Image 1 (cartoon, rainbow, N blue to C red):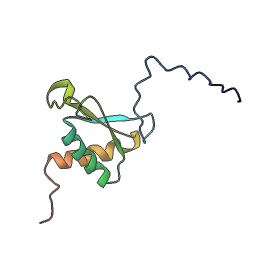
Image 2 (cartoon, helix red, strand yellow; image 1 turned 60 degrees about the horizontal axis):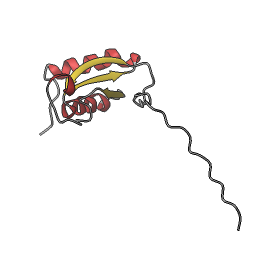
Image 3 (tube, rainbow, N blue to C red; image 1 turned 135 degrees about the horizontal axis):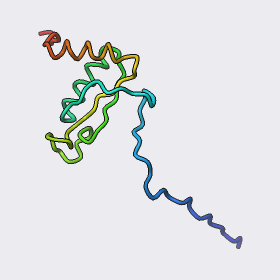
Length: 103
């Protein structure tokens, strides 16, 4: 019978870096802070519907603790530097109530 050799596993990282995987690259700009993951998803969808790629970052993004107040609910809406002006214009228009659903 042939001898079986087993290689030891590669050493695991004790504290792996907590870096989100973002499709926009490392240079992102915060355009808004939102409290609660559901609200953040709506705002993200609004920007994406206008062709602006964005990412959500923060404790409240995934709702792990199901809290919607304070720092645990905070979500940062991030866009590429080239999209900051357009994103801010769209968000201001939404704040003024300029977007409505067709009946």
